Amino acid sequence: MTKVLLLPFLQMPSGHHQAADAVSAYIRDLDNQAVIKKVDIFKYTSRLAEQFTTSLYLKAIRMAPAIYSRIYQYNACTPKDAGRRFFLYEGFFLKSMKRLLQEENPDLIVCTHCLPSYLLNRLKMIGMLRVPVVNAYTDYFINNVWGVSDIDLHLTPSHAMRDELMHKGVSSERVAVTGIPVHPEMTRENDGGERAGTPFQVLVSGGHLGVGPVEELFDAASLSGRITYVILCGKNKGLYERIAGMGSPFLQPIPYVSLRSEMNRIYNQADLVLSKPGGVTISECLRKQVPLCLLKALPGQEEKNREYLLGERLAIEMKPGAMEEQLLRFLEDEAEREAMEVRLGRYSNELESVTEVLKKVLFVR
Image (cartoon, rainbow, N blue to C red; front, top):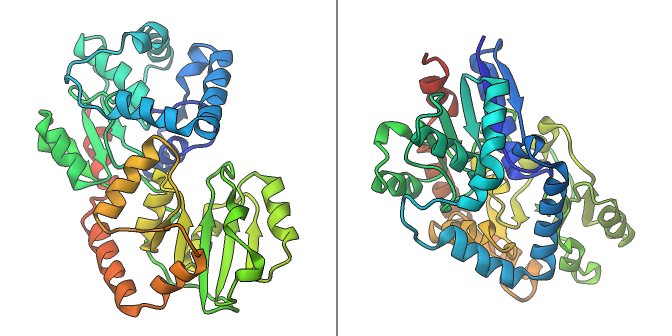
């Protein structure tokens, strides 16, 4: 019986966890007898440290975004020597990783975060690990912490990332351009669904935690009535109540959506998604081929995702000024919408099947 470890990072809901859940579903389709466990390395280190790290991150992006962005860009994105070691991470986590591997004894490991990937790559380099390891990247760039040289398979979201890995010495057989893994319940087919009301429907995503002052985007008095905004409030009950309290028929707040089939239906009804450039939201839009309009990025990964999407013209960007006017300019321009549809279709059609790619490591003994 095959045992698979999925390694995201931290306990808070994030794209790392969603990608891990997606990979789990693909593996289950291939081998319904597999034992699949999702584990956070902090379970073997310190829960207090995990809570502190989560709190520090959320405070940093809210209270000092510019400082966090500069630190992130320097540590994660500035070109470094390929063999650079992160001794702080090794000192704090490597012993815990060894204990995790000894207890679980997996047949396959999939990393959806760079830290466990780095630790496992290090163990493979020194001959202490022979289990196949897969990197499933959850953003549209490769930060410096990801393990690269000894990872057995890389699932990348873009051809540019594939080329970067090959430039670093990774053979083409170990790289597959799959996109960020999206759960198979989020179907490629987009039938549009049935809906009533305004000519256009825009899905507004603030992230799984409802992060961001989404209600500040809307002035009920200025809404034209040509767009209905379906606003995902996540677990932020206060946001849901504030949007509902605005009393506009064109603003429809939705609480946390736990069923992927329901989220799939919501995507099917959207003409456009208005969101920050988080990796999983992007990948879901690309899979559904729904146009994406980017709100201001959170510091760090989202800034790099934004650069990629705009550079490839796979999204449009919200500029300062009247929001609805900008959205209608795109939605009412049939030529531009058709051009975007062609670009989204081309991107989607060039991706390899996650299921087929995983066969390379799942059934190798």
